[in-house]
Length: 219
Image (cartoon, rainbow, N blue to C red):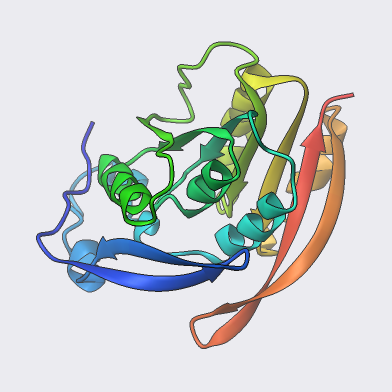
């Protein structure tokens, strides 16, 4: 599987989330990382390095996770990127698997666990179209800003149906993108119970973004 290579230089940024300051390491030259994409690769779009950014949906999810009872629960972070929400859950005593499509992201996530002295989640490089987990593996599953393309709905729902344990919960941080507006009604039509657990205004790139946290469960 083609992957984005880790650049030689990196930077550390301070991030405020869930009442804690996190120190996260990521590539220093973000522009070069984007420019390194092979435009002739027919699958290049699958490897756009979104993982280098810290998205507002992740910050909102961290706040939500901090208010949950996660100790001892089996948890899956979908598209974990730099690892922040996985680390938040791990710091609360959860048994976390951080999953991402890019190995480079997972290497930085592993570094960030060490930097912040948090018990490291199990970092797994996996395509959510082909999840390799046993049925009913997780009590809690979450993802931040993952419905930015409509084609992701069916494989993600298939993964949730396969991986979510009975009585489990799924949480999605969603920044009210137009492309995801119909997602929640679609889940309801498929038999899911869907609840908006509230919205949070998150600072982002010298501006603000409104993020909703949606909770899904099966009857």
